Amino acid sequence: MQTSRTFRKPAAASHARYIDLGGQATHVFRFAAPLDLAYEYFLDVPAVFRLLPDALDCHGYGPERYRLIVGATDGHGHSMAAIFDLQLQIDPGRSIHILPASDGPRHNLSGLVFPGSLSADAIFHPAHGMTTVEYRVDIDMTIPVPGVLRLMPMSFLQALGEHSMEFKMTQMINGFTRNITADFHTWATSAA
Image (cartoon, rainbow, N blue to C red; front, side, top):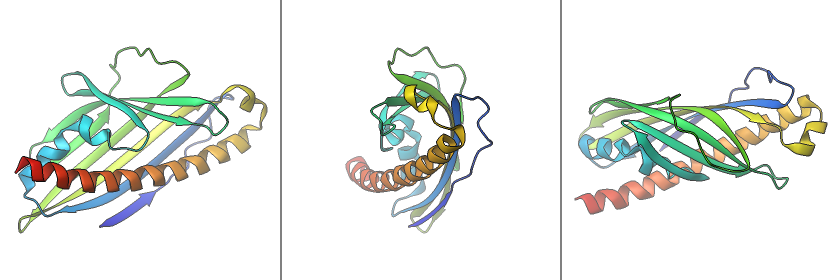
């Protein structure tokens, strides 16, 4: 199993009350399974994205359209949720691409809720009855600064946000990797 992570620092916050954050992670999965089985597994977008740590929900809202909701706390008692509207593009047996969508329905969530942009690519490579899946996720968010935190200097909040994003992306990709590896083997056994 190989993992590569890149955490990029986004451009400085564009608004005095928002923090811009982003991150990218890549993981290579190797499954002792034929290509068609691995491809079928990753094609179930809601099931795969529900394996992300802190994923509250992932559901379809239209043909090849999905909404992923990821929740978190900021460590100061504020609950937050990021909404990612996604669209699916496939090249059967070769790749699955998840792109940001802009046509999601209104939400009825309470608390600090903000949209995010997520793209993901799964590239499939079969070899000798095994399948290697190179999976890349890229996330960008503009997070509103909650309540009393607005009194803190923006440079401090931006640095804190970048550090938190790096920690969160590491936690998410490690959890996602463990969850997919275990879930795929369970799913493949039941599918056989």
